[in-house]
Length: 246
Length: 222
Figure 1 (cartoon, rainbow over the protein chains, first blue to last red):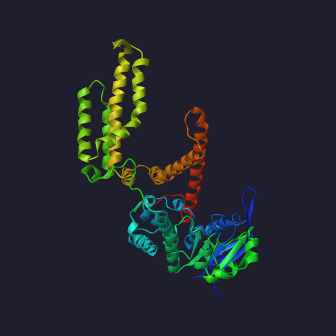
Figure 2 (cartoon, chains in turn blue, yellow):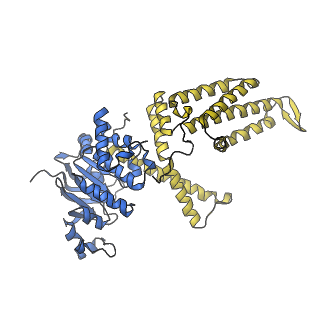
């Protein structure tokens, strides 16, 4: 078996105020996989995401990215390898223009000049936003901003992209466009979402996080059709959606 | 592109004034202001000349006069203060329409109005003819410390986001039957302002998280 891109071994974490969010999470993601992380509100999904690039360091257990442990000394390389797209694009896009925003990450890696330009344009091309390179992000539509947010991590050429609620607040057309873009990318992908049809559409594998542990994992279709398990973890399919017919 | 374009102060155009490099305009504005402030109040012809220069620039810029005039209301507090000066200053008194005013106060108030009006008009003209982003680049060229320019950049970037939040909070208040009519309603406005502050603070933290997630290590590199 090859080294997993993402390898979490019994990761536990309690916030400084004593609230424990993770109680020993074991999770492996292999190269080229697309994995959905499902779970009710308060299951520890966001806490888990913040462990993947060392914003939070586990109280117990280990996180390893392609064999490199997530510890203080490795943070710069870890953050190149793990690209996180946060839920609100207004948090992620803070520069005056799309170009500067996409260039922010690689610039932190020391890239300059023509190579930087080339990487920026390649990333924007991948999300279909190359025409907007000189626009200020706050003049773009919400869907466009989310696509640029994806470009800001693609440009780092990460080994895994982690998306926090990628479909939230998108209209159906933008939601579908983003799905087209994400399936066209040749990267390892992990997405945290409440949008179960989206998880089924994009991710062959799903992990259910509940009360700070991995409660179930397997093929997304098997997870979504396991009614007893779904119910016990407050997961519900939207009205009228039947995974069997997809 | 349905999104609104440009900032409220910026008037889109292609005049020579719009095209001039931002750092020259900023330096010009600062120089102009220093000269205006340093001119003794009794030199009225000098002030007339400054006003004429500004008038020529306004015509050259193609920015409509009503556009600038509406934005001149920011000067109101200064005008109120200037109007009070003749009443509160001490010294020889003069009678104007039966009201006793101090001579020194009249001169100081008049000088203040002239200088403030020229300053506000010149600043508005700069804002109207310069895109906020160009302005930041201009400040950088003028060797304004990078941290300051960066903070101003964040302000430009998030101004719309925060005013949007403010507007949504106002709509939500009004949807529940609240409109601020008298001072008894001010505590509610105060609490909204507090909530907005906390939201903005939290957004700041999330932006910072997003920055360090992309390898930001504290120094802002260009």
